[in-house]
Amino acid sequence: MTEASMVIVGGGKAGARAAVAFRENAWKGPVTLISDETLAPYDRPPLSKAAITDDAEPQPTYLLDEGMMASLEVNFLRGAAATAIYREAKTLALADGKRIPYDRLLIATGAEPRQLLLAGSERALLLRDIADAVRIRNEFSEGRNIAIIGGGFIGLELASSAAKRGCRVTVIEAQPRILMRGVPAEIATRIAARHAEAGVTILVGASIAHIGPDKIVLSDGREIAADIIIAGIGAAPRFKLAEQSGLAIENGIACNTYLQTSDPHVFAIGDCCSFPHPIFGNERLRLEAWRNASDQAIVAVENMLGGQRQYEAVPWFWSDQYELNLQIAGLPHLGASVVKRVPKDDALILCHVSAEGRLMGASGIGQGNSIARDVRLLEMLIGKKATPDAAQLADPSFPLKSLLKS
Ligand SMILES: Cc1cc2nc3c(=O)[nH]c(=O)nc-3n(C[C@H](O)[C@H](O)[C@H](O)COP(=O)(O)OP(=O)(O)OC[C@H]3O[C@@H](n4cnc5c(N)ncnc54)[C@H](O)[C@@H]3O)c2cc1C
Image (cartoon, rainbow, N blue to C red):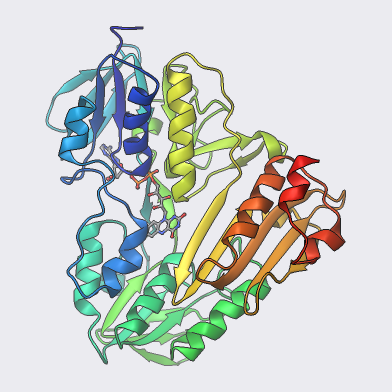
């Protein structure tokens, strides 16, 4: 395939990593990276954290800059939205009328924040790109009332960042607790306590009646002062381009374990795709996680170049709020019981074990990097489908590394 052309749509984490991976795999042919953003690919995790709290004006943390793209001979098309895929002709159409032929196409179009559908919700700011982060940061001055709708990761990271900037923060969550999706209650309780300590008010089981010019009114009549409103109510996979071209969709662009879509010449990776996970009984997953975007890029590129490698990396996600670091590995919801491991004072790791004794997930919280090593080892054990002894998991002095050898 030396003359073939590799085209990537989407210049986020997944697309940028894929561009590099082509050259790491000694691919000498053309690589085109197409992004509807005007900036070179940059990282999103800092946007809810350092971009808001640092004293300096936020600058994008570039994943690939002009120099790197030039030395990798990546043809980068910025501010270029892909509008259609003509699969029979293997051609991509751009909004400006250009046509880009491809031999293999990689879709890495990410996800976009879900919009609130309430009267007055046009007031709510969303966070996905650097311009959103700059706008939000400019609103976070001392003493302002910030109402955050949604007690998920983005909402809570922004709450922590707003509290650090001296704002009065209220988080409004419709569910009975924060982080209902994917985070065990015991860990969510610790996070909620830390927010309370920082002066953040978290209202759970709260439904919004309407949004006024300077407040949010709840269905039970309570009024929340709101100079600024931010909606962090989840993200939706961006698959319109794929859907319109007739590719199969299943909670995102449906891929097989090789990250190939229903068209063998088209692959999809990152937040926009769903895939069956071989080590979890082929449960179909769609992950919104930084490392997944990167790991999938590496595997998809190998397969686009003729490889046959299944994607089987263990899901892993982190969040930073205040001095706390939260990490989730594997799929905790597949556990039938929990074994607690306390690696250090103030740190907690829950090991989620199936009825058959298999380690399915690990979730932890601690200060700084206090849980990082153990969660990494647990993640490796999850990948090996290990059935560790509960007493050894619970004993913080027991070296988890030794289990990897057995
Ligand atoms: C504020 C924030 C904080 C986060 N923090 C964490 C964290 O702490 N830990 C963690 O694990 N994950 C975190 N994430 C998630 C992580 O950043 C994402 O999982 C990752 O960015 C996904 O990469 P992606 O390339 O799939 O998608 P994206 O980064 O969304 O990139 C997709 C790109 O494609 C472009 N695009 C879309 N459609 C088109 C089109 N038709 N034509 C051309 N271009 C198009 C988009 O504009 C975008 O540039 C965070 C995300 C956000 C937004």
